[in-house]
Length: 449
Length: 114
Image (cartoon, each protein chain N blue to C red):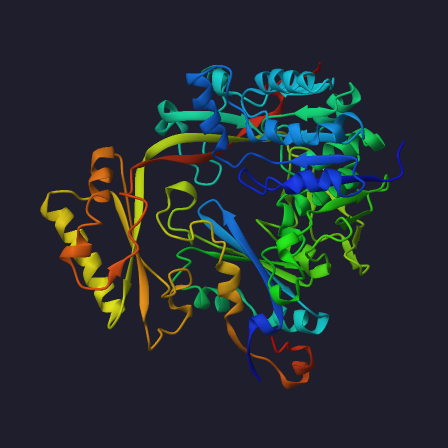
């Protein structure tokens, strides 16, 4: 059994820094690299890619990354845990094996399956799973024929199993975000299903690092205190068998780790802190002690866990119509009054052609569009960005809106600019539907090649 | 003394479906004890009245010197369906730090000038 393992997270979401994981792997000691590529609706995009081409449906960015850190994986022994497999981890693995072969390397890759229940939704409904919306209580029948993807947040022992079978890269689909870090802890330290406090510690550690630099000085309230954000270091968990752990980053990297930077991230996306429910355990976020050791190192101990629930969360995505939004910059004398008139003109012209929408928005960026009446209205306004948006089930109507912005530059009040990037086009709205499924109905599998 | 919360606290926010959460963490035990009594759900409801249309929930985290608030129906529908600029409540933490409060003078030593 190891005494301490170092788990760095190099990707907080799909679209995060492409260099951060490379630097984590190369710039200092590291045992595991975790990478989160999946937002709530990412899997729906992948599911639809796969429908068009059965060899797609995973995060292609991940292939580019592996190419850059292949020596660290094959020679230095850094293991990679990721949900980049999306809805097609087997195809992702085939590509990776080929990619390694081209460089004269051989790597063992584990694939976790069973989270993708999209193909068996009808069958599961017959077995009595309601898939009722767990936030709103709404009936699944209302969206059943518009579903794009359905994935279960499965447990982290699957990751441990893949590592046990010798995987150097573990490719999952929808495992929980903190589970990417918990999995290697279970494997290295032999934590058991009933070790609730230990599983809670690994889950808390994974929660802290899951958004990358958001715990190392990014998005931090006292931003003036953070040195060298341009060169920000991504977080590393130093986990011990006892469940007491440290959060740190590579030496000489920028950013800041303190009680406050870590504390802020603990609070991120928090519901009831007494009951943070993961597939593996229920964590009490009010239980632990946090200690700032200085030198960009914080220790966390005495994390308490409770037994997990008997169901898994399911992330379902579905088609919910179309939307578009566009912006115009309005400047000069009486900028706000002119922006208001501009909005009025655009909405009136659309109405006059018989086009109305299920929902619209009119915002004035620069004038407390984020914070409403919390701010006093400024006495001097020298420019404002008018942001208009529409939503409708009729794609043609949404595209018609997009054609009504540019004309106002020459047929509205003076001082309007900033219309670039062409006409706003209708975007599909892929909405999110959270539900529950009994654990007994989910069958996971792990294989390593 | 009149101050704004950003001089005595940290905040972070994000989305929880159609709702947002705002965590508010204090820089000393003394400030936290004051906040537990004074930063109530009704104070938050009033501050966010033009943003949060639903119920306000409040949780205490003594170990972090923090309060966690859920701002009900605060994202214009939430997620990808919302048309508003800050559909994920990313800025709601900063909005809370703008709140003006009347802090007892004996806590002035904990107030930051930044």
